[in-house]
Length: 358
Image (cartoon, rainbow, N blue to C red; front, side, top):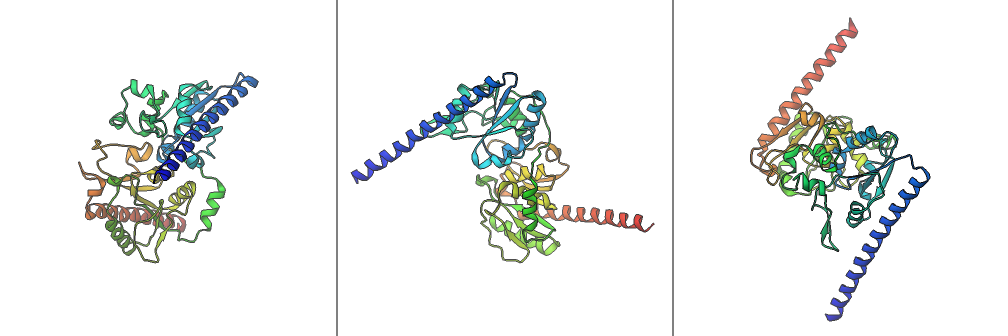
């Protein structure tokens, strides 16, 4: 038992000091590369945006890349991001260099000392922790503005808040997602019908989630009431649905492939999460199950049409989390609005057909 504990301690120490060493190493490499680049081309500015996670935040803050390019049209714009989310930026024409964040410590070192002409830290203080040193990434500007983890939604949507804590101009633009042709063609080859409703049922925070049996009933009722098929996306499914019109793509798609499927859908039904930001970015009509989030009874994470509520229906229950929504409260809104949209589309098609005949 004593030997086992001794081994565990030394394995932990190995991982700890290796990670610290590599974090410092990659910080030095980044620092050196930018310095050398500036040495050979001193006229060109280097601008960095630090927003490493989560993917919904990165999608929501895409307009910041456009804003930075507008402010510094000739600068080289760098975006520091976790490797798992870099594909969201790979095809963004306003980002010149993507820097993969090795660790939170790496970003902490860059916030202390960096070689960039301007460095915009979009993270709130205290949220991102480097466990080996028991320290968190800090944002002095956010602290000075009193924008903290327990009040940040009082200062606007995600795009507005992150612009403020970074020291960038506050903008309120709809987000975009840049999907390459290769991804579009790959999704076209998947075997599922053209008329689909995409659903996303589960988040990494249970109060945001709706009851599993309600999702299963909702899928059954949608399949019975409408001529749509249902595609579930996400990391993994907790549902038990056995129907030829239900397609489970959970855990089978990349982020951009997920965005492309949402883009192809007539409707998106989901909770407040990353895929909902995709739906906003690709202009798919959404039904979002919302509720109280921590101390925020009412909050708005989205910009664009979702904030304006012109392309979305928020289904909420005042003072309660999403998990407390009753089934009929959700079903009635979805049923009525899908019916209304089908009638509008039918009228539009009939009108076009009449004009062609005349």
